Image (cartoon, rainbow over all chains, first blue to last red; front, side, top):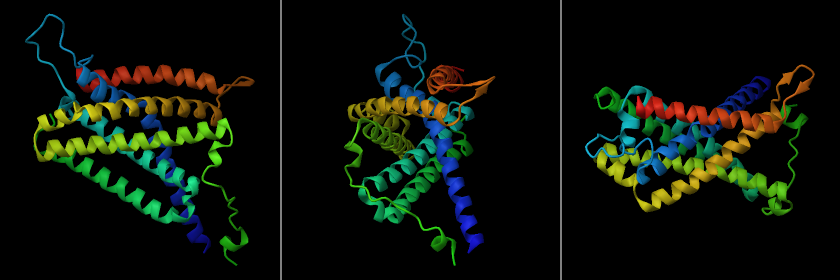
Length: 136
Length: 131
């Protein structure tokens, strides 16, 4: 029983540790990612704006962020996977504080399922693009 | 006797509207709800990549230019910045750094980390897009 309790405590510590790491990632990397994909690109702002007076200059878009080089793909994976874990983990905990405590197990199951599937799908696309040469 | 019985877990029963009792609770709950936008943006981006993987690069770029996606992302950006600011403040509160006889204040951690956020953002743009 005691060994089992220690195992559960260790698992909890690990899950909360990843949660904290995800919080740091969401705080430091997610704002710039949203800026690039949702503000700079659609509104033609730096770094996706073309140089003034140069009509034929090649401009980059967020797809370059994903496939431009390995570092960009790594940035995408760390930012999205870390933020997804942090966001879902924190939100499921919030729901238990809003009167849904009795559904904690079900919320955890759904939450971990979304995290697992999301990270696997993201990793799969990036690895596949790396292996077939789409990522430079 | 198992640990669970020797140390019973005491759970205070809360009503679903407890967070409206005072301003601090309300701000706490707003901070917690920022996580929903963090998660939804991440899922949205993965969905965008799936459009690219199953279709073309143009599908992904058109998805990013969809007005509904831009609108949601702008809201997500505001909430993410709020998450960042509260997270930095919290770091200073839970892990103050001891310098000589004094300890750093949470607002100092907030200012320092915001400067760090700006540096990291420029570095990320340079490394991932401009290089």
